[in-house]
Amino acid sequence: MYHKIKNLMIPKRTLIYMTVCLFGLFITVFIGIVPNWISLMSLDRKITNLQLQLEEKKQIYPIYNLLKNNDRQNYSMALPFPAKNKLLRESIDLFPDILKSISKEAGMDAISISPDLNLLSTGSKFLIVNAVIRGDFLNFRKLLIGLGKVPYSESVEEIQIQQKKDAMEFKLKIRLALA
Image (cartoon, rainbow, N blue to C red; front, side):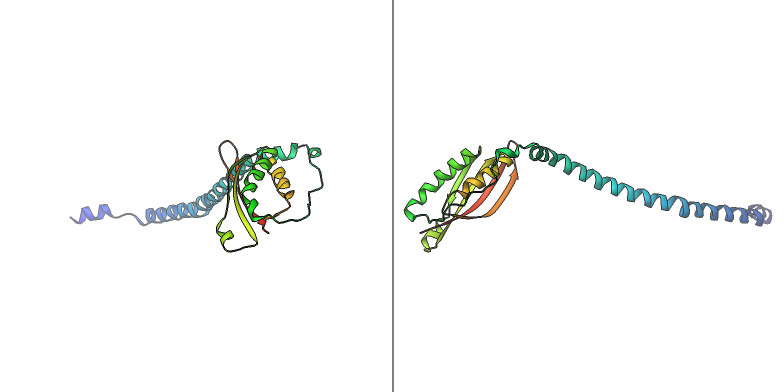
């Protein structure tokens, strides 16, 4: 039995060689492989960020081209500043038709126009009109210029723009001065 145990004992020199080899392997892993792995992960994150930026730029590029290639001579540089006036309460129902014609002149379609009638019951000096208009982004400027020509239009309080499949959709909150 002693003879079997003696055969299982590993010589001291072999243990030293194994220890040195394992130490060399750990050094190779911790100095060579782990830093390269960390660097690779960092590069992967940078690549992902650059791909996201590229996708964003691809989506914005058509609008950029439209703006860049737009013939600026078609637009007059002077904006309309009509004398301010107030809308008579009896004429409130005429404004949706006016807004429809302004949007049609701008090459856009008025989807819905709804005045906030709750303000009328409080005796307010202004009326808020919510409008949804669909069309091209470049024609939106023409629409805003057309709204500026309306003498009782005080301001556009809110603009929300959403890209739909076939055109852009503009949600406007327009403040009108009431008499």
